[in-house]
Image 1: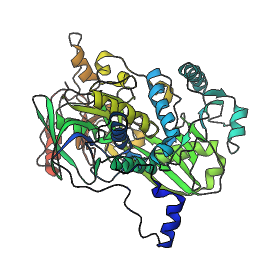
Image 2: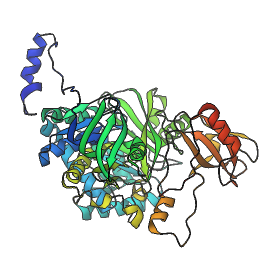
Image 3: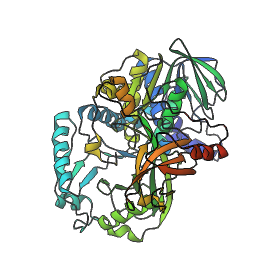
Image 4: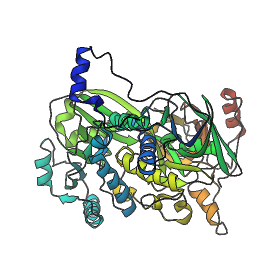
Amino acid sequence: MSSPRSGRYSVFAIAREAFRQHQNWQRAWANPTPKDRYKVVIVGAGGHGLATAYYLGKNFGITDVAVIEKGWLGGGNTGRNTTIIRSNYLQDPSAAIYNKALQLYETLSQDLNYNVMFSPRGLIMLAQTEHEIRGYKRTAYANNLQGVKTEWIEPKRVKELVPIINLDGPRYPVLGGLYQERGGTARHDAVAWGYARACSDMGMHIIQNCEVQGIETEGGQVRAVNTSKGRIGCEKVALVVAGHSSQLADMAGFRLPIESIALQALVSEPIKPCMDVVVMANTVHGYLSQSDKGEMVIGGGTDGFNNFTQRGSWHHVEETVRALVETFPMISRLKMLRQWGGIVDMTGDRSPILSTTPVGGIFVNCGWGTGGFKAIPGSGWAMAELIAKGTPGPLAAEFGLNRFREGRFIDESVAAGVAH
Amino acid sequence: MLILTCPYCGVKAEETELAPGGEAHLKRVGPEGDDQQFEGYLFARKNPKGVHFERWRHAYGCGKWFLAARDTNTLQVFGTYKAQTPYPTDEIVAEIQKSRPDWKPDWSAAE
């Protein structure tokens, strides 16, 4: 087992490979054939699944793990989000897990020896109605009590931070904002790739193009998963599949409080640097940041109806862009390069689920809805503890499935609106 | 763009004219229901990847609620029918089975 800190991507390695015309770079992670049996099988090799595997190995020494993936690694929502990272949530359980994730993101490149391009450039959530002013001030006070550093800023400060913004409206005037200086973005693919490489280095198996077709249980206990690459026996299974959580739960014989809908995003042609913070405008369901390539990355709203089509719809694009053009007049002449959709798993209270299930040995991590990317390290950390111990630790405790029966909702959608 | 025909006014309405209302044919749980039944009624949606029955409102039209049968994976619409129907009509079921012969109706409530 080689250390993930080995000098594979050192400056010397780059120089050495340059002399070989870059023909000798090795695979970052192995491509094994599945064994008959693993201690833990994680379904879904997106950010959350891979992070779960990584912290199972790192924090609990469990490395007899397979991460199986229907498509390709990081090809679902991990590769489709707008890469925003923040932890300015209202409720204590959310603030705790998202802030844990933010803290882990801060040192993730060093921990994985893989540059995830974490860029804590600051993040503003614009208040564009009187209600949002009150809501965000409340969130700022709550964050202060939770130890999450955010502040309420007045329009003048917003303009200093975002010179391209138009404060005056008239339809959506900027009345202030909730500012989190430590928020920002990271390179989404690199997060998945970095975790995948570290997992592979620990001896875990990452098996792509391997679709789960059935889950075998016996006496209320999981025995195996049947896949397109054969039967894989296991002691524990973690379902970490976002949009298809209901389908996997169905195979195991239970229902989840989840509905799957498409969320979409788009990017413009690349332009010169013009905005070095992330701006979210929840009233108009739009958020905007500039990627390192110079593209303006725009997140839009969700479809209103259940669907599994990873495409989105034009009228949502129009709504989002129409509203953003008023707040950012300079983007009105930009051409949009790409538009895409991902299937997000929305729970009844719009907060995630990290939980045991009615079937022994099966754990679920789902329901991150429109805001999963920012949570990846914290989610993996909490999920690994849940799988290793069989009972949730402090981070996951409030996110159990039983909250829907007991009425203990984590009512975060009030604070987060739609862009979440 | 999703287009549904309102069964009341007969207008072919596209999705911006309509308000989605989630899964249809949910059985309301009464005061005698226990916590598990209420949880099922409130939250445990079928969320199928395939045939889905759902509520819509012709919000910018006649304003009435109606029901639709639609495939969540292909967005194929099998038909719409009036809200005062306890189960999808025989015509709707026949229409679904025309393109999906293996599909069987399942009217069981959530648990």
